[in-house]
Structure formats: C-alpha cells, structure tokens
Image 1 (cartoon, rainbow, N blue to C red):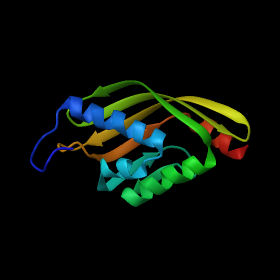
Image 2: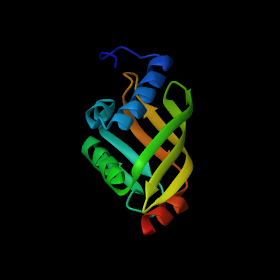
Image 3: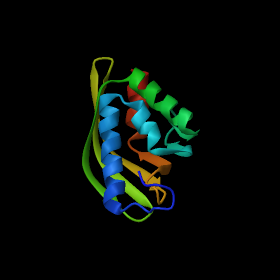
Length: 137
C-alpha cells in the first residue's frame, strides 16, 4: 500500500488483488480488510443473502465469513487480471462444495481502487441462479 499522497502503479494494484485472493485462500481476513477502505461498498447480485449492498469493512468481512460457513472447499483460481487507473478486474474460476455437491462458476470481480491502492467499491458478477440452487440444496 502507498503512503497518503503517493499514487500506486497498475502493477501494484494488480499485486494487491492477487495478494487478496491468496489471503482468502489462507483464511487471512485481516489482510483482506487491510486492502479496503473503512467505508467500502460491496455489491452482490441476486436474491440470496449474498445479494445486495454491504457497506463498511465489517459488513463485507461478515458476508465473506458467512459465505465460507455455507460452503466447503472453496477454490478461487485467478484466470487473469485486467487493470486501468480506477479499476482492477479479476476473472476467476470458482469451485465450492455444499451438501456433497460441487459447484463451478466463472466469476468476475471488479475492484474500484483509489490512488493508494485500496478498494473503495467492489462487485461480484457470477451465476446467481447457481448460487441460489446451491443454497437450497
């Protein structure tokens, strides 16, 4: 992360996003929370409990914890990452298990990042019908 007033490069922003996925794999929620602003807004799609807007670092972390409690063997394999001055987009192959069934999805994560390399807003774009089906089983 850059100091206040210092603008991070695109490569640094991409590294932050890659490191965030690695932190998730390790279950390191503190590292995840450290790369978001305190007032982050996370947008989930669909009508499940993971859909809607989650406002604030604690709310986003709480949603992630709840997701990890609902599913087992969650694997988020980054396929590619694209970046511009304001956004980093991660294309991710996702696999998880619930109720003895395996669910696979291709998910897009969009991170709106400030000049210091912290995420201020995020979107998860995946198969909402698949998620709803998994939660019903």
